[in-house]
Amino acid sequence: MSNLDLKPQESVCGAQADDGPATEVHDAVKVWLGKTTQVRRLLPHKRRRMVGAWCFVDHYGPDDLRLQQGMRVPPHPHTSLQTVSWLLEGTVLHRDSLGTEALIRPGELNLMTSGTGIAHSEESVGGGQLLHGVQLWVALPQPVRDIISPSFEQYSRLPRVEGEGYDATVIIGSLGDVSSAATGQTPLVGADVALSAAAVARLPLRPNFEYAAVALAGAVEVEEHEITVGQMIYLGTDRREIAIRTSVDARVLLLGGEPFSEEIVMWWNFIGRSHEEIVQARADWESESDRFGEVTGFDGPRLPAPPMPNTRLKSRGRTA
Ligand code: MN
Image (cartoon, rainbow, N blue to C red):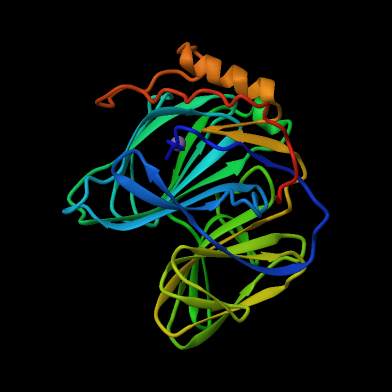
């Protein structure tokens, strides 16, 4: 997934001493992804830019592909992040500049690590009638971001945590004492939690993590605040569990991690630490430098970078 916005707003993130439990409900911003797909963007949010190392959350669908064209994101670059592709329904074809060509299917983690540069394309394919999923980015910390090799990994078998009223798939990181084989480069968790109607689910949390929950399907009550599709609740730190109630079968994406201590700059599809670094990444993409390599097989041109804003990009806190 790409940020296709032609005038991307600068997003800067970094640590702030606002720890403790919280219950902030945020509404998604609707963003067009190209001409065909509208997504609900939950991070970065103007008041809350990161949750742990999670810095980008787009929720899309379910879209009926008999009525809509579906996803079609031309080759575009990334730096200093990992993309976590997670589908609830449908199939997406991923191609990247490492030569990977992979089908992304529901229930399987697809994890792409950019290192200092990678490029990929994504398009929905196949006979599936619905497309429903999330595209997530995880910021890479120093010094890992400069030394880790670009890679693409697929995990088709993921561990589950089951409890009264819930069945959680641990996509990446750890929930309770259960860990995904995909561990991430900072302590974190991403889990897809299926909830049964009329039950109270109590999910185990870590006090040193901050957390947020995104409604993927149905409406749920998290710590006595109702959220529905298109909303996220930020829960803060210092919690050992959260209670989630629902009167219908529902799905929630639980995201968490140690608060990210570095200040970062996010612009378009790049993460950096300074204005100059983003300018260089943009120039390298526009000049078709070897830094990002080439995506082969996509039927169409690569995505051009939008112009840089007139102001300098600055790093600020991870909240607004
Ligand atoms: Mn992307």
